[in-house]
Length: 394
Image (cartoon, rainbow, N blue to C red; front, top):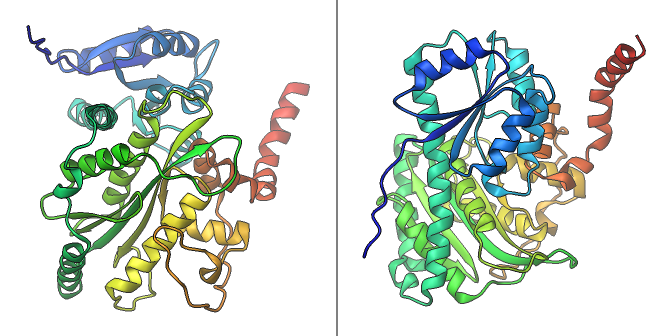
């Protein structure tokens, strides 16, 4: 007998020590969302551990036992991917930029004020819950495709020649109408925790499954092709760079978090090199050729795989690595596929990343990147540490 799945309302966890605040939020979301309550951060954490159906967390910052910042820290550093990637919405009594930035730096996805109207609140929660659902659907689809075994995945993808033709036409249209054009290069590999070096190529079945996943999730106007060993290229037009980045991040983490291997010492790495024009202004206002943009995206995905990074490597991440590791365009070696690069003059070193960027990288697990700028991070946070020590003494 076929089991029929009955759709259920997304479940929201509300963590606040104020009964009035909890009751007010519940009244506003009841009927649209299911909900669970927690009186403090510790109770909220225990609820997250036992309830996998929670899609969004709404939390106050000031609570007994474990405050909102402590709860955020546990969530973002959890070894359980469904918890680590949960959207966390902070409830605040004000809409001041300073508080918003501090909450964002701590790992908050969004900040809402207690006076926000109901329609806006429901809209934000709906978007966040759908993002979580799509992320988990990516993971489940990938697992199912791998279990299904070899198929005709690559036959669904465009050939390299077709991709090039499509990309040329899309870029020409973008230049003519001043619309955005994006290239994403996604490469996957297997990394052993005890070994350095470029991640090894995964089994063909996994590569095929990722191809099917990409083909089923991109828009009909986009184009996907397998352009190297475990390397996919996606070209897309008329899309905001942030939207393309969010899509690529979800795919990368779906691959990394999917339960495809049982060895705890081996992990999947999924890096995506991204280039966007004109929104990214990658060439200083110059009208680009497809080859120039393709080379930038290729260089960035290789950089990500060289450092076993899961996630998107764009302009910001590449510049940070040039500063931290002394990398220039001429000495980043392309390994997938092999391409000989001509030597170029070293690029001028950009400014070091600011504090919010360093804190965001820390939340995202990019510890190696942060360590390259640990002096800046320490100096920026020292006044806060001094203030805390003064408060303790008094």
